[in-house]
Image (cartoon, rainbow, N blue to C red; front, side):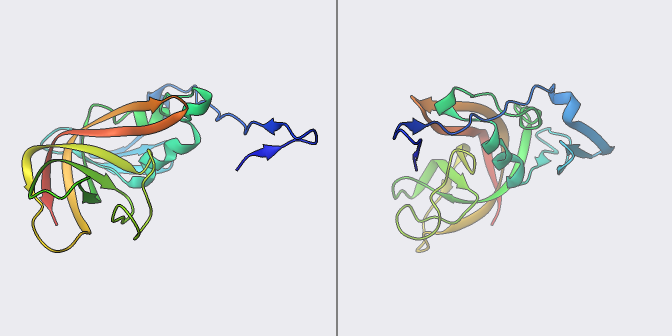
Length: 178
């Protein structure tokens, strides 16, 4: 929705405020396997392939107040950059853009969405483009699928003009459990 001034001219929404802290300034170690990021997000694990960080969706969606393609603010917040390049585990709804029996790429989303009419369409902050190590079997009747995935998280904005299309990718992913 556009905001209009008294003269009828469009008023630009305020630009997001960048967070100038270094990533390590947002980190507090609770114990050998638990980290607290930005005083808000607790993750467990050590970030390796054998013991990935178990990350909450709230950590990923928190970038919403910082990243904005329209204003050119494309740097993720420091607490999100801490997990960039590490191995993560996350539970999510998953789907493919077209109906296939075996999928090598899936879209992980926070909210249930059928691609059309049921659920909430994802944003760049609550969706993860995921490249599977091995194809995942997509047969079955149900369009809504939920599971847990592991892989290496890449935090990298993908923008087209003033639109942020994506921010997160998981590479070399494995399907852990339904």
